[in-house]
Length: 259
Image (cartoon, rainbow, N blue to C red; front, side, top):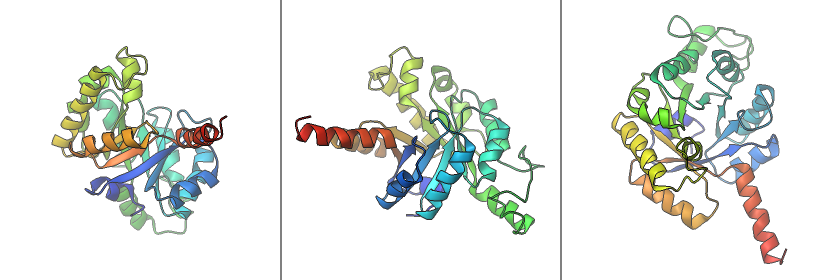
């Protein structure tokens, strides 16, 4: 498994990752040691910022897995900070329009192509040790913006969003989408599933890789969902989260022991 997320997304092989919401490098160690290909460090719902995310990304690097960071919003400065910290991909939540997707992509690229501020002294630049010209070429080839579409408005604009040049991938957000559509967290509702299906078909037709969350810790349900989305051209899956998987493991032990 390559640690490069773009390579995983472009491959037809099934790639599994998860969310890191607990600010513990040891948990990232376990994610990597157990064979996941990537983790998404959650600065939106996790109670930490880029300073903590940088060290969690170091743990991912040490374990040979890819990392991305979900930011709190589509902010060019925060995108720059995440990339400067050596986290190669940013997940932009609540992305609803092509203009917003263009802004996110531009924030990942240096001038004159984009909006990213230039500093050779950051971690990704080798702290002023690397050759700047080589660094820019390598950096822009490997970093990217992932559009997390999770609202009814985003679904309405999905064709324009996935046709934005330079977008690395589409991530569907079934849980938030269910709330946006009035189904109060029921991501299994047929109407929500149909909206997600529409997003997937549209992205695949545009040649944009799709990342699909699989919330259920039940392995049989997860297998069914993965099999279903594999037939639709999806190969990259975000399984549960560190909290979901740990809580499920705890509950299995208390259940066995009569707790």
